[in-house]
Length: 116
Image 1: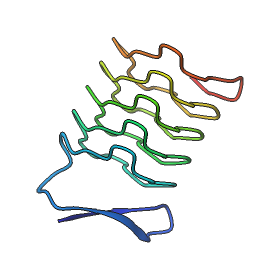
Image 2: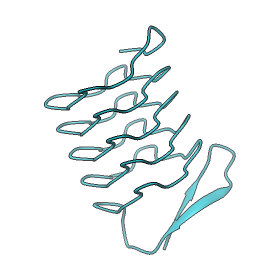
Image 3: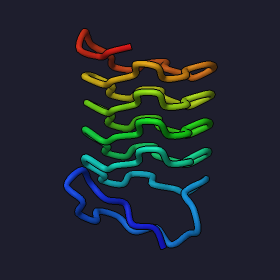
Image 4: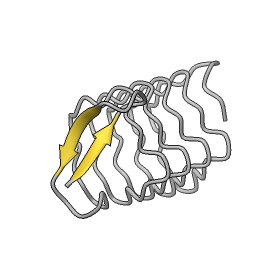
């Protein structure tokens, strides 16, 4: 069992698995979730609400974020290789040092506060 906590340390989601590789969080409400330095390869966050969540230093290769709300998300030094970020709200997000090779951002809602 893995407990997903928010920035304040409160448990906001429980996953009954040995790790988070390929886990589905589809449509989940994970406001301020802390996924720092976690291997999430192949996970599904499509349609999830991840406002102000943290993925700093995580492996998000091949992750599906399509249609997710990623406003204010911290992707600093995150591996987003081949990630699907189509039609996401990525306003105010932090992507400094993120690896975006082959990531798809088609239709993404990006504003001047998004930092690359």
